[in-house]
Amino acid sequence: MTLVKMKEILAHAEENNYGVGAFSVANMEMVIGAVRAAEELRSPLILQIAEVRLKHSPLHLIGPLMVAAAKKANVPVAVHFDHGLTAGKIREALEIGFSSIMYDSSHHPLEKNIAETKKMVKLACGYGATVEAEIGQVGGSEDGSVDMEILLTSTEEAKRFALETEIDALAIAIGNAHGMYKGKPQLRMDRLSEINDVVSIPLVLHGGSGISEEDFRACIKYGIRKINVATATFNHVVQMVNGQAPFNQYFSYHESVIEAATENIKRHMHMFESVGRV
Ligand code: 13P
Image 1 (cartoon, helix red, strand yellow):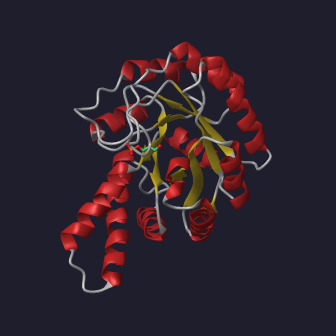
Image 2: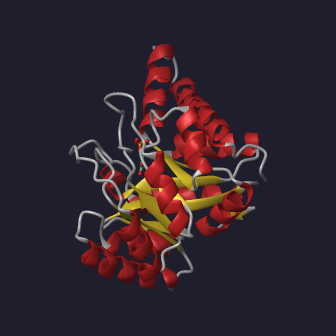
Image 3: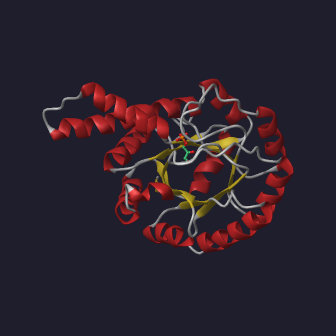
């Protein structure tokens, strides 16, 4: 158990046909809540934070906390640096002990995305860490600051990208978007299935907040192994805390944040069928 490489978690999910949640955290309470959910449900866990969130949760503080929580957990936990944008921060995360990184160069044309991703694979390799990268464009943006349009991943490009970069997991765009969906998500299962037929590494679905259980199950059937969830947990924490305010003491607020994170993460673990796997 304890801190493991993300690729080990994904390999088990691949062998046994289930999905693993990668849950974004912003503070100690959310880290405690995520680990509590995983331990209570005997589920593997991926704890993650994205580079754009470091303005709220500095890496030198939240990073060691995430790694320490993973090491103490009695289920396998990977600590993942989500949407890494700069080599400097990726290196810092690896130095802290993150067992996995995502390098996001998906806004560049294919050739440049391949070339830049290869450099990060080399860097992460020196630390024995798992590497995820993206091709195509997931809609919205990680912190809601821009609204990127969705550019579906091309099957041929996905195949080439995975082979040439030698990454361990591939994030794809099939109609998924970060943040809450404006209408019902329209996921292209046909494209996902085509990509799954030609790409042998585990596939990653970003923008998990607001996708239905039925769609999650279909995505898992067609090869999605890692599912990112951020907004749903942040929103659930705010709703639960607001619902219980006013607090007459700080520590009941503190416990509510932990409970809200645990509750939302457990709900997703059930949908991803990762419960009872460890
Ligand atoms: P959501 O905020 O839509 O859940 O997306 C999370 C995500 O994909 C993080 O990379």
